[in-house]
Image (cartoon, rainbow, N blue to C red; front, side, top):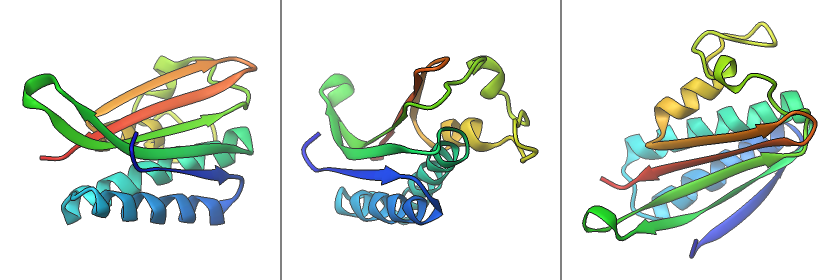
Length: 136
């Protein structure tokens, strides 16, 4: 990742900071307004999960490129924590499932907003979510 930034996530203020940095990076990378909004929303969702479930973690964002399919550029967001982990990732990814009486759109919503979404979680060791959005 050429341009990269890291944001510690511990509070609602940090969620706003990560979202703002994500918007700025997306604009810098040439994303259009609609995609910038989607990227910021996905960052908000994964950062909120860090605060609510792990108490602290980080979000690392940067540019990403691929040589496949004629070459594409985009943004990659990695959210990681050393929280309790997700016991049942498949269940957590179901639209409408919530552990805290929310709407249950957090992780499935973030996945829907981005082009690529991968989640790795281990009980007692934490969670890492890697998301990518490619420029059109």
